[in-house]
Image 1 (tube, rainbow over the protein chains, first blue to last red):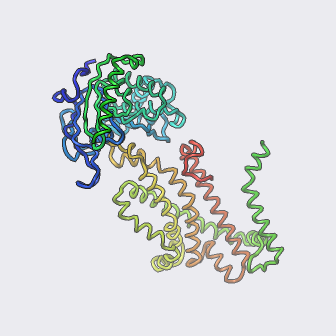
Image 2: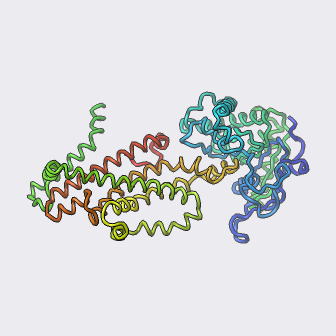
Length: 278
Length: 262
């Protein structure tokens, strides 16, 4: 666990893996479009678990898209691994609130989808031996999130929580360097959500990919992340960053400890400020 | 329970029989002259008496229709993919397509006859031109409505636009595609028969025109019955294909909206 627990995003800019510097994005026209993001800055170290919280519509999802290279900023720069992001990155896994599984594919086939696209897997997967290896890898991943024996089931045969687990696995099957999560637990009930927090934490502790989690659930952010960044209301910018110095692995009991509660209260105060001002 | 299920299975048959029974009864009750509306018994009698002639024409119409339909499927699928995959192309050719769809295809038959002469070719082409539109519209819709977030997931893996269409757009549009086939096959019959009635010397349409010009009205209705029967058979075939290939879309239960009952 060499995670940079102590440094806030801002301070660690020099060594950071993902770097967003004064990025702005205006949707639509140059002048009349909607300004979604205004000079947002953020830095995430390699292997760090970062979370972004903020009022709804503050441009959190926009920030994810910029980092993924799916959109270009109108101003400012985005760097990943020291290189400017100009085209969609290919070492990214994404998961959203909607699991977005393909109903005509079984769970296993859904899981293999990224491997049919990402190089060099897309060529290898046609080879039978390699295919077998990939299937074994997929089964292993499913087992890790507690989904043994569902690989032949279709998505509509799974509960919402199970679908979201599959969606997480799909985002990780090709071993991406960065995992981008856009409120992945937002539509789940409280118990399922907490189970999934632990599933995600386990995966992250094992594989130590870099995570950016967008959420509006402050407990979720504090529970999972090494650093939490608060965004202001639209046009969004990062107004507060805090390192979360709780030991790993985090356990449900910690959520009732005073340190945890203090973190949440502090964030809550900043969110209140974010909603009040523009 | 079983009686109820039996009854359930038999309802379409009962409806057909009832329809013909009412027709027959109406003709007899009001003594409708044969040259205005022959009773179905007369139509079926003509069907049996002139079976060999009708059979040849029916097969010809069926083949004509299926060839036109086949071209419509290929062309409609390709056009649907291209239009669905590119917003630019969609915007560009949408007015053209709508305009073309608004043209009554009857109006095209004389032009096709000028180009290709009287006979099978105009009938095939009319069937094709009548049938391709719903196919391409449905396929394009299926592809164009892929969730933007799903596109993001794939693009962030380095997927090209072709990858997205192949892995998601096309499979996703298959329920729409098969639903459109059921409409398109009926339209293909409309197209081929219209062309046969105007400019052909073979086929059910031609047979009906010659029969009506000599006031053999029961034969005209026999032709109608044959067309309807072929249409229902082809529709059923399309429905079977649909169930085989896109069961995933209907297995989700009543809520999925694409498919009307077969």
